[in-house]
Length: 95
Image (cartoon, rainbow, N blue to C red):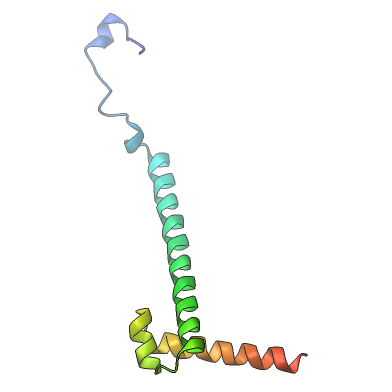
């Protein structure tokens, strides 16, 4: 470690200037957390969509039952169901 000349050696800046106190470090850390949260939410959404689609296709459960099993709202299940119906309509009309 670098040592200061004698007159300055009794003053310590060690506790003042740390990486955690650096504004650029803090900004980078906040951006990293934000990006991580966004990726996590996206993965969670994709997983929920997949679960709901599988339950809609493989069971005859009601919308409220599927919502309860998947841990999502009934609105979310109806939205996925509507998206799949529209997708199927578009794929059959374009063939």
